[in-house]
Image (cartoon, rainbow, N blue to C red; front, top):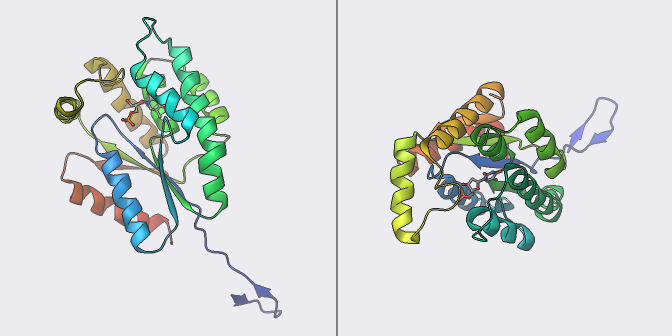
Length: 226
Ligand code: TMP
């Protein structure tokens, strides 16, 4: 509580409704880092929701399964892919993300609309303006306050996903794409980071998880006075 010169009492509400997203190529370690940050907040009593895209609600998780592994003998077109991702996103926004932010919680999201610009826009070579407009519809106009782009080169990404492949038994539709696709995705991410330097922080993902997390915490302390 603070007092103005005229004696009026002004309540300064601390901002706690931070929307923080994790982005990056396959195998970059986003999920591990998002989980670490969730633990870090929980240990300090900061209310926090960890969620992911595509997914985060029952319907959006069903759409995720279709997007990652549809096997109905029919190719998913780029337009359908873009729309399904944003249909999932709109469910997620209205049912999980916006209510959590409105309750003053921190929301940590493993992938969000930058993935769509990188994968559908750059990766699938889809008109970037159209992707951004559909994203705006899907995300109900809400952008992240802070985004970590955990950057990783193609060779390291492949070696990490092939290790995962052994445990899971197969690549999903996106992981199975060729090098050219994944190179465009990475270049797309780096282009977003260049144009939005305040929001998107590039973190070198080609290091151990502790080093990556130390960089993330440094940015958190600089940008979020929690
Ligand atoms: P992941 O959560 O295991 O990374 O899987 C999600 C996959 O979905 C990943 O390969 C990237 C892809 N994806 C898109 O292509 N566009 C999007 O907008 C999102 C959120 C994910």
